[in-house]
Amino acid sequence: MDVIWPDLPLDAWADTQATLHRWLQIGGKVRLALAPPMNHSWTATFYVTTAGLTTSPIPTATGAFSIDFDFHAHELIVRSSDGNRAAFALAPMSVARFHARIIGALRSLGIDVHIDGRPNELPDDLPFADDHEHRAYDAVYAQRFWRILMQVDRVFKRFRAQFIGKSSPVHFFWGAPDLAATRFSGRRAPPHPGGVLHLPDAVARDAYSHEVISCGFWAGSGPVRYPAFYAYAYPEPPGFPDARVAPGEAYYHGELKEFVLPYDVVRLAGAPDRVLLEFLQSSYVAAATLARWDRAALERPGDLVAE
Image (cartoon, rainbow, N blue to C red; front, side, top):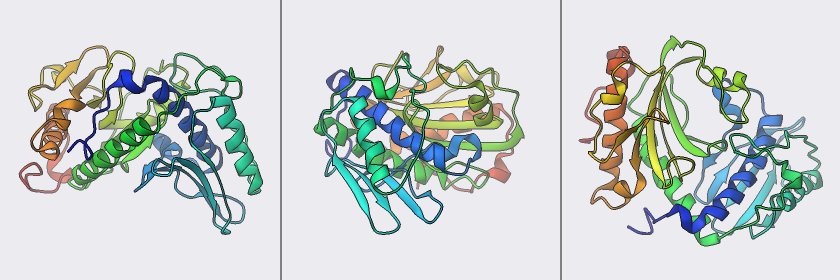
């Protein structure tokens, strides 16, 4: 079980997490710069693979390429549809060095791209090309992080399959960063107030243009200093903070306006999948009921947790 749901104490890999976060933002911004725009920023995301994270194919004028973070071989790989590839080792290096190497790898394949050179949703906005501070890479913890994402991706996809309304893919946003899945009622939402750190308000308003109930996993940051699952609704319906959400260790975080379930509650459970599904389903049911979603039209029949 420690291999399937490994321990990931934030303090043990905080420096690696901070560096990897910025590396992922660089790779994600390449996709964002070249792929056709989609609503809710779905253009920007990564997807979990059997070895790490991928951008999926990014179109060029004559074909496509992908950027893959391989946490088995610990490589950054750029693959082109013409059969060529460029790669370099994931190892301790500054964000500035990583930025130069990935841009160089792309250019070696004939791919010229200009990205927004500053990080998003982080306290600092030091340009990637000038960031010589963040340079840690612990391969053991980077791989543990991916192994957790792989398990969460698997359970989230099972949860997603129960919903027949509009829903997002299970995908990895490099802003927070978090692995997330979002359900939509189909109704428009009031304009989002914006104010997300180092993120244009227009991006937040596009993301929340319609009513959503979202769940996700992140490795810990800011006011939550441990890996955790979350669930929230936008707009938040009256009474949601007082809803009964399972398991009992889940709690409503007033600052984040989300229900939070510590990852270790799932990791140490006798049946981790069941505990996580209880959290996902109970938080969704609470939000959807309070917000008066047309659940009969949006959900497949059956008891997801009991299956």
